[in-house]
Length: 383
Image (cartoon, rainbow, N blue to C red; front, side):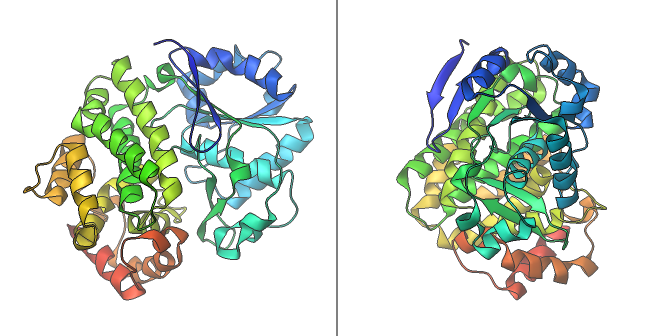
């Protein structure tokens, strides 16, 4: 695949193709960045990807590489990375890794250019009105799932223990570099889990009651490529399949474009579970486990959108879509329920209260109260 530059729906610039990471130096120069600060994690360093990446960025000293990204970025990590950014004299940021480093990179860009605690900038406090210009950001994903490289949002665990969304067009990375070769080393389980993250983005975006035909079409096309044409299973079964890897990276980005329309109860519940910093649950895995439960609840309210999703994934009109995703999860080796992930019945009331206040709950096809979320969590606990 040749390297190409695309203009995408979220108004960022995307460079796509095998070997496209080689473009990073030129893109930094174009943005006027002379001292980039790299936000990544220890797993990326241990895999050898970081050392290979450093070859593309001349004079990148260790003082401008932040490795301490947690599995779910929190406010403490934002402070630590922001302090390191300032101390290094950096003038731009590269997020390199999965969704956590990319989200942390965006949060750092906000933190180093704005005053005050992060809660001020969350959707809960209408924070978008407070978010102005931020330093240049280049996002380079090494997984195919979150779509954070093109989205307006960063999801952060606040000092209060809440997992909340910071949202603004000013947080869209200036450049997204999508190099399928960077995803080849991802193990089968993480390939599956991150892929299901992208799948959930598309399903929930289509299900959102907001009217956005472009987002629906983008989400449906991604579902067709990932599931209808089998790219996800191909990538899981053969991680060296660059065609499948390339397709799934595109699916991830399209999912990030589609969910500008909104998400829903899967993400509201996933964010609630993901705030537990002891369990450190993987977001994509949570989405995979929760999707069948929420889809079963929402199905009666989807109308023609249910058929759109069925057509995209290749499920006949008269067949059960919930059963399809349960079978898919089993084939991918996902946990069967939340209990297998460490969630207990004692945790459910607190999780329900968090879910009902999550911003993504607002675009579920039908409004769900705390009692409704409690019932959904009970179902997902032992499904």
